[in-house]
Length: 577
Image (cartoon, rainbow, N blue to C red; front, side, top):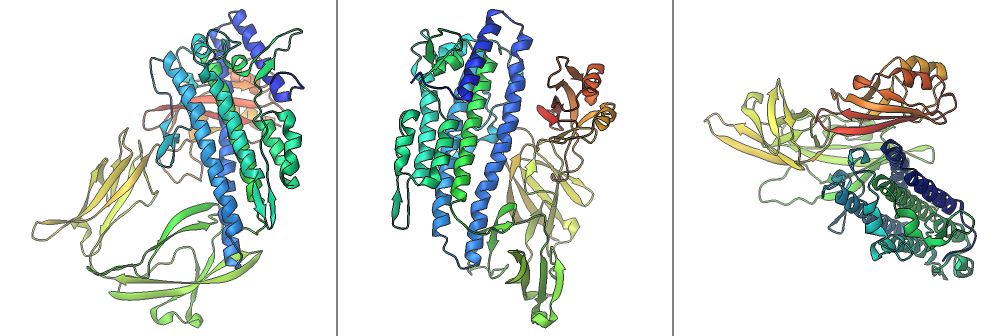
């Protein structure tokens, strides 16, 4: 309801509404309204950082579970909270999908029915697909249209918004109530804690009386993050209260309304992060250090005769890619510990002798600062010819990239082995093959073909690969990249260089070239704006404001084109010291 003391966030929303109304009243230029595109880009960058943090939180559940299992601990409690956290994530994805869907519907009405959803970001929950993000707002032509947001989410009477507009607040408050219910209702030994979310925040203190005291601060925090009042007041003296949705969308241009949806999406992801982290903290267990989780399949043997069966275990493997573990092992007659060799990384297994082979050893895992040997063994067989497709650089095929593919088949000489593809084009380059994939393809398959001496051929195996767009590159000004605090002298020197887009060492793709098409350079507190020309060259204004940027945030927004020919946007943000 209206009334009561407004939070700083509510005051900010009210001020944004007044500024927007003033801009419209003055009939300002489209360039001014287009500043909301920059605001939206900054919000999306911030939301991306939150989503990365959330991914680390969900990995933390696996780390604690592994630690408990390795020490013989009970994993029931961690599994309970992990299940709750997964449900929290799913509900967050659904709520974000609801917001993105409304924003896409609004933009589609302005852009002749175009779909503005970035489907590469879609998520699937229980067989249903939910959108998670939009394409850049920079491509919207009718970005100053304010009739569509008003009619779609408010209607003719802003004091009585339509159902679609009301549903925005209803869904957001519903997700808030879902989170606090998940946090506040559970059993701890013989004690049962309960919490019933109140309809009004003013009743929150009384509702917290039945909750666990260690949860109350997080519940209050979630109410603050996702508290959208039914009505808000203007900041002018005597201003009447108006419905929240009217304050957000009445006479708001398309890009301003889309930026508001992006801000609401950020609120949802932030609340998800608070709730998931609180659940992770519920279980006190030391964690193994790991930053990657991958599915792994294990079997007693790597060979099977026709007509036999083979037990296959599929499990999740978590590991720290930054630390190479030491391994001690022996093979066949050398499996006695006193004959073991020591190595790190990959073990090269010999295929010189046909038949069954056994490898046995230990891997040293760091637990609580100590290296503890963990035993392992592996059986494999050198036998009949079979085909293999290997991707040395990756596990997927990328659009617009020359994917290196190697096809081998034991029992066939290299000149008798070829590859054929479905959903991709294959060409021979020396001893290797290059696979290229066109737009619109989501999955491709590659088959290994062995040619017999009698002229016949045999398909030695077909392998399916997911097709994805190339990862976004990192934006650089010389050697300066996101989040750095370079010296002003370094900034001035790099200003004579070009802005470039390229992959850092974390992306294992080589020979991928990105071309900077255009861009802008802004410095907080300075009115002037610089430009980025074709090829990444900075104009005079850009160099001038960079020379005055000590202690101020520099934002560079660029449009670049990758080898697939698709134009995309990237950002570089740093603060010179």
